Picture 1 (cartoon, rainbow, N blue to C red):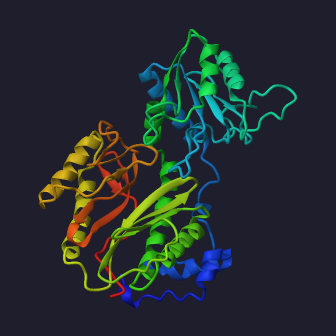
Picture 2 (tube, rainbow, N blue to C red):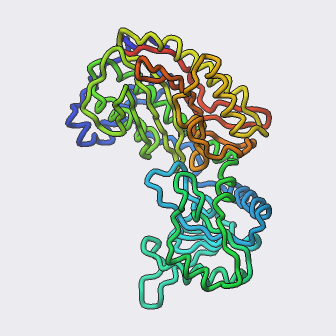
Picture 3 (cartoon, rainbow, N blue to C red):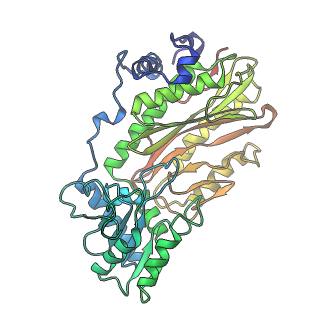
Length: 444
């Protein structure tokens, strides 16, 4: 890797006013192209080919059948006859919500029986790849109203009819997004909709189906992994921009906007950028200026087809470098490598967390200085101070959106953090990224 101080300056011929107003696609593409060679990317000036361009336009029939089989296996374990699932509405979901995952449609609800074809309600797109046999129905508003509008649906009559058609009057029915959702314990199901459905089936048993759906998402097929690899690569393009831009005297705004543009140009979708130096955290433009002698921590998230992948690449800014940096940063990279060596099918998140905590304790770090170390997208985000899903057991096909060990540097009011996506294989773990973590001082 070249010396960061010899890389191009931030003068790309675009004013801050242009950046704040939003550069045109052509300008953004030229900015992105000028920054990509840092990690060996080759994109001709003016090109703006989204990362998804080399992927099939949609997931295949076989991929959906794989998902359905896994969901039904989990339904059998939970003794569920049917799932009823609403679409999620997170502001920035880490991956497509459950209805899209099950049907590939824009439906508002899906009725998914253990046996028989699913019914997607309010879907305005066709029912996923051809041959799946998904039945599309409008929402249940009465005649005379505009039916099939997934934005303002009248869901309960349509769900009730679908359950009756599938013979679920005395069934055990799991409800998606009901309760026990990670980071949203009380779920997001409409009380009115659920009340009407449950009253229509007094002899049925209703319970949360959240655990079934979460566990289904965790095991990825090759097509999903290919998309997530693309998103991970997009995040690394954001890292390239970070390393080209950060130096003393540059504002958070300039760094944030350039990374954000790079992510958008690279994928055609909006990623996410969070920059932290000391007590300042910027998840958007911030006029504060980077100071020499500090350390930048960040989360750079690439997004492809609704799947987020995050890369973390800490770096010192200017001189003098905080004394702890030159020991904390190499050890953080070592810990990342050792975590990958430890990961394997059959080990629980609790075992993984304990292994991580013990690695830090060997350096006298009794306060790990991190909340999240293992990030499973819409599933668990676990760590020493955030113990979601500790009893979950690793399986082949799991993808961590990032594994990001963190080494605290209390005297510098900073941390050393390096992270990247990881997929669990049949025998161990494979890092998704192929770019080297390095201990760098930018703008020295």
